[in-house]
Length: 489
Image (cartoon, rainbow, N blue to C red):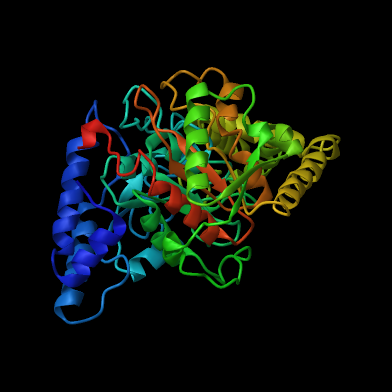
């Protein structure tokens, strides 16, 4: 079994184990758990020789007496929406099948600079559009706690890789909940940073004003260490912030005594599974035992978050995905006797899946003449109101705590025929995304059936450290601490 981030890095740096041995162990677990008809299907590409070459380079650095980085020898999985030089990157879509980027995303390069080992590219909903991983053009990943259930999405493969201990950590992207919801479904720690805290350079865009890269890990400390490394200003991303990056890992030991926690009334109403509610309430009580105070808060515009998100996100997707036309890269379909327009249509028809087409159509409609103000313009105004709700709440409390998702992991195929039901899986994660705020999902007590549950902790902009401190304080008391799916033990 692959250990925690800090544990592996310390052992490799001390010479107690070789990075190559860790890499081989990770590859062996992937072989055992991921492939075949009954495998978890968390990975879309595992470049074995590149993995071993990188691990040997880490070992050679240590042998030469060169100090090793903070992620020395740590196997980290990379969501397939992030560009990796020399390794196929598809964003879960047929339209990019076989595409090999000529460069690394900034976050990938930053991991490598700290001697991490990129163990492989993970499965995802096509272009990050989905909440179950079932929209992947290459087949769904499976939840290791119950392989008949979804792992969440869109970063489902990254969550599965960490939950099944095929990697110590992983990178995902979160547009409306795509790190936090899979983390909740798989019993892992997932962090969505403040918008702009982490560079998006090299992330294949879905919705540019919402997309954010963040880590999964087996524990809070590991997620915090990875976040400290990938965060920070990047001149190649105009939306990245220049704020200084604190040592998020140090926040894991910070006192939470006296912190005021807000519990939003709107998140504990109809639609919330009773077992999820009980588990989250118990976690909040645990934070009270750690010295926090708890009070109700109101986020009145929460009820508009789903509608607002699916106007703004689809509008931006319609624009971003226009670049996939069969001309410059990726799939190209030549229709018999057709012209350039026919080639565009044939390529996009065969290359995009149903959900991507649905969102492109929705986005094009809300941006069209005569509808822009009625839909897109109005959605932007409601987004502002949602952000103001959080501003008002943070005038009274230091953090907001809630369920990450309204239910435990649902069955594969359960929601694919009902898009609205699927969209509602992100009802508790969407508001923080629209407001650009940081949020952490950390495991709570499981359901009676043994399915994971997530506690979401939302903090003010650029205050990820406070969320990490609260997550670590709960993790120390959590009955789900260090829980591993049976098939991965």
